[in-house]
Structures are given as C-alpha cells and as structure tokens.
Length: 463
Image (cartoon, rainbow, N blue to C red; front, side):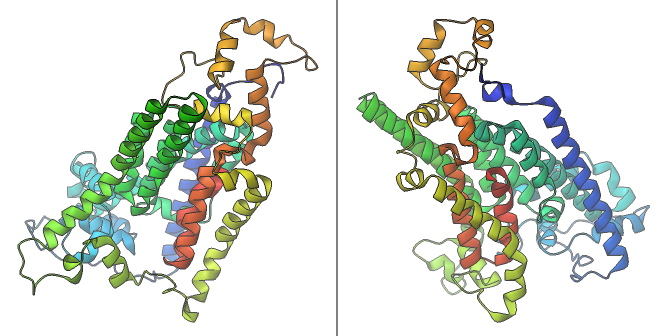
C-alpha cells in the first residue's frame, strides 16, 4: 500500500482478488461434490432415512407416473439425510408436525419456488422429490459462492488489507464445516444474508442491510443476533450526536431509528413463532393444547429444541458426547484464541465497547456507521473535520507526489493508522462480541458440534 495516498475501502476492492475468491468457491464445491459421491459409493450411509417419503398429511398429491431416469433420481435423493430430510419434506408438504417448526421457512420456500419454476421440467425425468433435492443443492451452493464474495468485500472494509481479505475468503471456502454449506442445510443462506447484510451496513446502505439481516432471521434463529450490529451503530452515532455535537434531539432520533431497525430484524423470527402458535394452539381445547401453548410467553422454538433435540444449559455435557466435543475443539480453539488475542491487544476497546477508541478510530467509525452515504466515492472521508479540509483541494495527483517523509493530510493519516491496526481495530469489536456469544452458546447450551457451523464464517472474517 503506498503511503502517499490511502485508498478508500471501495478502491481497495480488487477485481482479480474477487475473481480468485469466485474460482476458489466454485472449485471447493466441485471438490466436495466429488468426495461426497466417492464416499457414498464406497461406504454405506450412517443415516438411512433418505428413501423415506410417505404421503403428505394435509393435501396428498395425486400419484405421478414413474420417472424416466429413476436411478438418477434415487442417486440425488440419497443425499437427503439428517436435517435435509426436514427441509425437503417441508418444501413438499408444509409444516406437518410440531418438530418441523425447528426449521425456519426461508430454505424450504426457496426449494419450493425453484422446484416449481426452474427445475419443474425435470419432474417427469427424475421425479418430484429428486427435483426438490436438486433445487436445495443448487440454492445452498449458489448461496455459498455469493457468501464468499461478500465475505471478501466485508473483510476489505474491516481489515483494509485486500491480501488478508483474500486469505480469509479462501480459508472460508475450505473451512472444516464446508460440507454443511453444500448440503441442504440453512447455513448457506444464513451466511449469505448475514455477511451480505454486514457488508451493506458498513457500506452505509442501511435499508438494504436491514432487509438482508432480517432475511438471515428467516433462515436460522440466531439471525436475530444480527440486530446487535444496528444496536452498535446507533449507540456510537447517538454518543457522537449527544456528547460531541451537543444535539440531544438528533441523538434521540438516532436511538429511535436504531431500535426500529432492530425490531425489523426480529420480525421474521417472531412472525414465524406466531404462525406456529396459530397452527398448533388456536382452536383447540385446553386438554388438546401442547404445554408450550399455555406458557406466559408461548415460544414454540425453545420448546422444540429442548423437547425433541435435548438443547439446554449443560444438557449436552455427557461422557458419550466426548467425541463431539473433540470434533468441535479445533474451530472452538481458533475462536477462543482470536478473542483472547483481540482482548489482549485492545483491552480498552473491549471494556468500553469502543468508546475509548483513538481519535482516528472514532472519526472513522462515526462515518462508517453513519446513515448518510458519501457524496464522493473516491474520497476517504472519516469526519466532518477531515472532509471539509479535503474539499479544499481535489487535486489527487499532487497528493501522490508528496514524499513519505512529509506531513500527510489528516484524513489520509487516519486511514493509514487504521490500516496498521487491521484486525485489532475498533471495527472488529462487534464481530468479536458475536463470535464470543455464539461460541459460548454452542458450547454450553447447544449441540457442541454445531459450533463449527455457527462460528466458522465469522471467525474466518476476523482472523
């Protein structure tokens, strides 16, 4: 990076790097596909639920004629195992049973739409259920590829180092939990809308960011945690308006708008719980109601996770689950080491939630987390003070001629100092808080092996 002129985050985006990330993502999916086919050919699957496909309870569809290529259809359906069974079944028949509500509707909805449109002509050839499975595979793999690209863009903005962003994105493509992103699981869609939403948030496209982060809550329940990014944004904007600009009304408006954005991110998950309550509880007598229907806060999701999957605080701490703890130990150790390194490097940032950041970082955060888009995309504007000074001189060529030993303009000095901070900058704090919460929840409450899925894409970004 030249020291004479510091580029803005948009200028740092490298088209060749994005091309490499795209190639790595596509290549990794083909490698996983080949390995999956190989191992399924050599070894019998542990889960034998793939062929199970009883008729739908609600509106049983009329029997279809036998497909022209039943062997190909069966080969595609053989990959429908574990949670994939639920997603495909929901896309085919809807939410038939109580435990189905543990799986949020975004992925089944995408599968249904693709099976009825793009892949509908394949139904007579491979069968309807195989088309549903094929739709799921395409949705999840395409979502993963776009996630890798957005991860690179987000990493460039945060780390201000295109090479480090490239490395993080390639590592993400080959992460230990990569197989789940190519299976019919909701992780790919969740990662896409979470990472993409954070990218648009830091690009100051707040309305798009709200939409994307809200959709992440339609993919997985932990998508509601993404509301914390808008909470962090509102907190620092309100501090800047109240204490620095002495504008109390502006600070109040920022807090109200931030709260509304957080509520928008919670709406998809809450509306799905209301949908479950409507289907499972309303119109039934007290004796027919399930226990969770009678609770003060009838939250279906928590009940299902506890009753059917044994999720709860320390409930997974059993000796027979030791192999799963060992399976989760690599990514969990990486997450813990990342958090410890950041805390030791910037303890004042962690203790103060970023309020004790340096003047340069505060100025940068005030603009990056601002709801206003920059007027000039080629200028690096970090505060009103630095922006006004830069507007006095638009001659970029003369800036490039300034020698390294001369005093740089304050705005460029700010950007250069942030480049040196990289991973330890205050920008990373919200991601550190999220990965810490997710890792702790997965270790103490959830099935611990899921920590590889939940933490991996966040940890790749901040590592």
